[in-house]
Length: 293
Image (cartoon, rainbow, N blue to C red; front, side, top):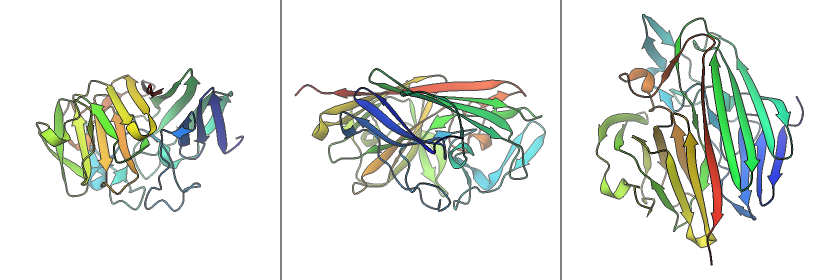
């Protein structure tokens, strides 16, 4: 299996990678963190107490009531954390195998066998690459189930939140939140939550999905003289923003190929049907940029 934690570096850029959850434990650029290791509640079984980013596979966010209908079948699942809903799939809770590695690149693999906790069986491959000043996270899932099933991908990075942190991410639509942290209804984006132009995060709770995303985002930390661009390759039409309040030292900006609870939403919510042996792939690029003084 090799080492549990892999240290990747390319010039001024470095990350620590854990086989547990296929997660990043840190991300630094010229000595400044652009990822924020954050504990995830209810996961006492995790090898490490805090992750800075983890992959979402074979779906992201929640599945309401842990059931969904697909084709002529109803599929049931078991909760996988203290949350009553199935959360973020399996990859973030699993032990990944190191398939290859170098000083600035690692390829991780995870095989999920079908079991009584749910219908999914799949192979996942994650590539973590430092090239120049860019960190690329790539993810591929291949359906090995007998049934065609709906699949989705995503990434769940935690970013530092400072008093002046600004976010820019242009989207078409906003989803309100209902009980159980599930999306409720689509609506136009409220002015104070519209990040089409760079703005600071609100001081209150924010845990909402946006869709019709252009696939690009910018995070600005004026206190540190640092920007971070986020670009995508693949069907990342949605993102989630999770920001507890102004006292939190982190926030999450989560690129996803589908809406939360898309399993129980109408067609067009972003999940991709994969027959046995078919794959879905996507990647994001995080590029830190030092601002001129």
